[in-house]
Length: 214
Image 1: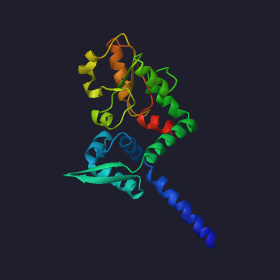
Image 2: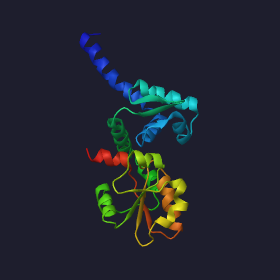
Image 3: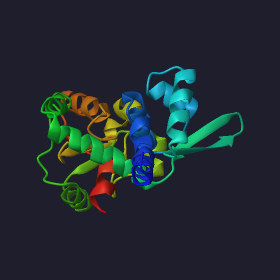
Image 4: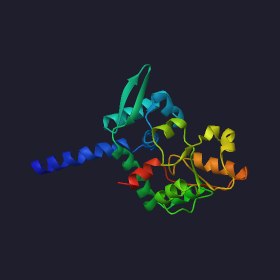
């Protein structure tokens, strides 16, 4: 093997460390969750429907690839993405997958029974600021508090039924959550429409919005 070939193999191997780390569907889900806010191992295990042990193993692989970092808080270890570039990587991957595999957009359509016809997120935010729509964030409150779309109001899906009195039936509602792989907004829209609200779903989340602004 020539010196040049050895060096070239090493260069590609470094990039492959990342691709190997994100080759698991569950690790991609953990990245999506951490793109919303830092979370403990216990929170991630619950939200990804994994055991603590398996969640820890996946996080170790992501940490070894320098995609996540962690710190100890009392009895818990809290994880976060090392950089917003990791969140952008997730967005790029799922957008490329949607372009390459026609079955993925079909699944998106199934997950979005009443999709908003607003053209882009900037228009969505402008309409919300002008009070022409009610933009609601149905993720957990901790994720909303970490970061959310400008002018969005927090209506966590688990509290939505008891908070509907704060919504105006005369103004259209647009609900969003973590992005196209999250079903909170779908469930919120179905519930609100049953209650007589004019509600639709915004498919993107904060990660997609931030990626589009850079």
